[in-house]
Every structure is written in C-alpha cells, then in structure tokens.
Image 1 (tube, rainbow, N blue to C red):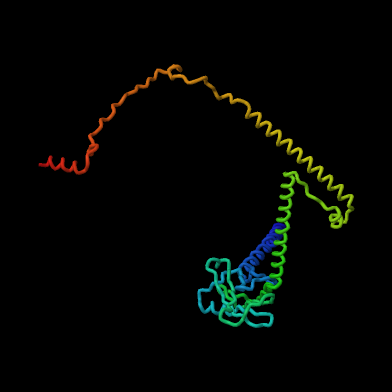
Image 2: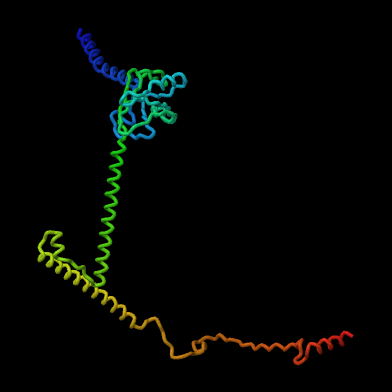
Length: 303
C-alpha cells in the first residue's frame, strides 16, 4: 500500500514538472507559426517621413513571396494607402528576392501617371488587409494599419536657412577675429602698439575712463616687455652666429705655395710627346694668279 502511494506521488510530481514545459513548447511553436508584422519603416506614428518616393518597408514573421501570380495579385489588393480625408493613393507592391527569408515586402506610392501628389506635413495611413497570404499559405488574420506624417518642408527650409545664416555669421566672426589677431601680432613684431580711445571704450563697456587708461597702460607695458625679451633673444642669436663665422675652420689646411707632386713622395711621371706640325698643302689657287691664267694653264695640260 505504501509503495502504491509513493508511486502515485511520483507520477503527480513528474506531471507537474513536465506539463509547463510542454505548454511552453506548444506556445513557442504557435508563436513561431503565427503570421504577423515584425517591424516597419516608417513605424506606426512616425513623423518627418520623406515626401519623395513615399514608401513603406514591412518585415513579416514569415516569407511573403507566393509563387502563384493569382495570389500575388490578391496580395497587392490587400494594401491601401490613404490620406487624411480617406482619398486613395495608387501603390505598387514589390517582393524582395534577396531578403525573402526575412519576410521583406515594400509598398511604394505610384503617382507618376496620376494627378495625385504627396503633400508635406500631411497624415497618411497604410492599411494591410487580413487576407494577406504568406508563401506557406497562412493569412494575416487581422487588419493592420501603419500611420505616419510626412516632412514639413516649410519648417525644414526655415531651419536650414537659419543654420546657414548662423554658419556664415560664425565664419565671418572667426575670420575677422583671426585677421585682427594677425594684425596685432604684426604690429607687436614691428614695435607698434594698438591705440585705444578711452572715451569710446568707456562708452562701449560702461567702465570708467581711468580704469580703461590704467588697463591700456598695463597692456602696453606688457607688450613692451615681451618685445624687449624677443629683441634680446634675437640679438643673442645673431651674436652667436657672428662669433661662429669669425672662428677659422679647423678642417681647412693652408699651404705656403705650389709644390710638385714628387715633393709629396709620388713616383708618378708624366711623359710629354711632341707632335709634328702638319705639312702645308699646295694651294689650288696660287697667289696672284687670275682666273683666266688658271684656265689657260689647265687647257694646256689637257692637250
């Protein structure tokens, strides 16, 4: 009797342990086999969607690329894009061969051959019908909607214009500031100091004239001290260079005069060969002979 009771208790314990796992596995398989929308671009409730080539990219939990043309045409009718007033916007449905396993499908507005325009700062709704069919034949089951708002072009243009004005103003400010600093540096190098009008500066800053004069005097004293230090350093460098130029180079050697190479111990001898002067060739035109005499002489030789 005790053994039977222990066996019954063991069966109950095993059942209580394995039952939740079994239900969880069934729930997981059920969720895995469910056909639903995983994500979309734009998301439901997004704002600032681009007006040009308005489109919605949708990822489903299953592959959505039916091989049957009839099913594809039926799926295309399950997508409806409407504006705030319920006016229908023509769309085209495109399947992705590359991302078919990810369940990608794209709905693109097709307003090329119509008088309909996509407006800025306007609300649109994409409705996906419950009869949308996956590749394995399962259907969506419930109607889904994705609502979004297009970009406000006027506001965007204003923001862009303000940013451009701020950027240009910043460039002008920093350029003028750099030019002013460069001029101050050049004046300091030349020993010139910037003149300050104490009355004008007092009016601009609200400080007293005495305070501005005192501050300007301190600035001039500081500039003069910096200039004096720079001049002293430059003079020190010039003095060192002049001193170096006056020192004779240790590697240079001087000689008292020219000496023959044999004086240095060389046995190399140079052999000088005198060449004969070329003989003078007889002139073809003897000196003092005219052209007529030359022709007469040559004529006699021929005979």
